Length: 572
Image 1 (tube, rainbow, N blue to C red):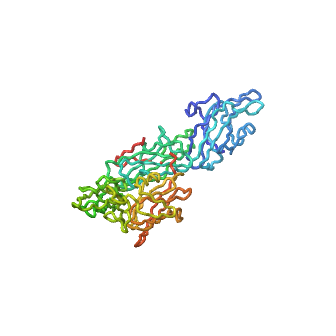
Image 2 (cartoon, helix red, strand yellow):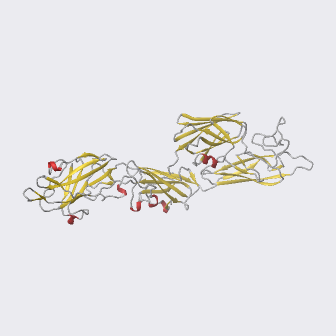
Image 3 (cartoon, rainbow, N blue to C red):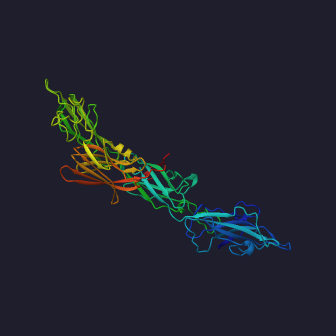
């Protein structure tokens, strides 16, 4: 046991002692968590009792003995009543006469060079003894609150920083910031009002370095006493330009530096002196500009019942567009989809067909084309209004060989115009299931709400989830397939180099359909790769890959002043 020089002086002179009984020894408070490079100092205040020897003479001997515990297990003990002053883990007498009658004493466990174990709790308890006839030493029975404890924490916390969750793009200039906190030993720093300390900076076009004062709006922990928690706040960049917005942060834990030379163990209790995480950044691209959508048709003047092939295209300089289009043909019939749907009009008139799509940030764009439909000549016949899918059907309502056209009514035409929403004939195999094509929003919802992504492999366009949340009832990975021509689509789900699931579908002709891949039993969270191969009936095969993250459901999903006066506000 190493003793720190005793602060032997009158309590009134020092003004350091806690409130005590007329005769007692009390421990000074220790922080719950202590940041120390090696050992840790504990302090006590004592108020002496005068002893008496066998001859009834006053004896001023008064000494202290100490026990040390590590995680509630005794690692040092004393034998004050047996050995007297100076015995194992006991001081000599802290007084030699009537004065001083009180003072402070400090000590550390073990030896001078001992390094206390990180992550473990140490407690020191003091007892006082004085001379008593025939015993020969008597325990000071007025000992109250003579133990102090602290947990050693030298490790800095780890954080994650997210802007608008896992989205790559957003059209909302009020950026949603989340800071995830994790520490092996202590919870985040809690200052006045329970505010933890996070330093945050916000910058467009590149990362920034947190500094200055902690950002109060971003310093309210969801669960302040937990070693794993999170913080949420916002940054409003409405008045700023679009671009790649970066949010960088660092966090402080609760560890207070040790004060080995004084009784005030909270002398350096500021978040700047705690263990501070390595700065980390998150980002999102702000894009408030809608895509430019173009719509065209194979003919802009047609007769009633004549087949029209439409075509859609779009460009977006920032967040890009896919091949998911919604078509309103302007005649109050069912909507179509895809880049090249077909349609027939059953009534003469002028119609405005609208193609709508969204970019990666969710900005909606629309293109239009005007179609003039003329009435049939008097005494002529009207072609039947048949459902025609890309690559299939015969204008005029008949099927070669005398069959009934898909989507038509046997013996006559179908009233009203029809669209390409019915999937083409298919044959699925492996872990594949085919349905009518869902929307991109439905695909995201079926996967747990993580958003979607798009890619193209030759004549194949694919809409797939970015993220899939694992639940007991979620057994399939949904997506949308659009093919420009007949062929076979092969889908493999890879975990590293290992195939976790696979399936395929043979598609008879061009069109759009829903496709679900059966997941393996008890899939694990982590990063997966979707391998997509399209083998057209004629021509070369094409291959693309997409990354999909499998996540577990959430149990409930530091600090520079904002850059350029950008306000940070707490999410309430």
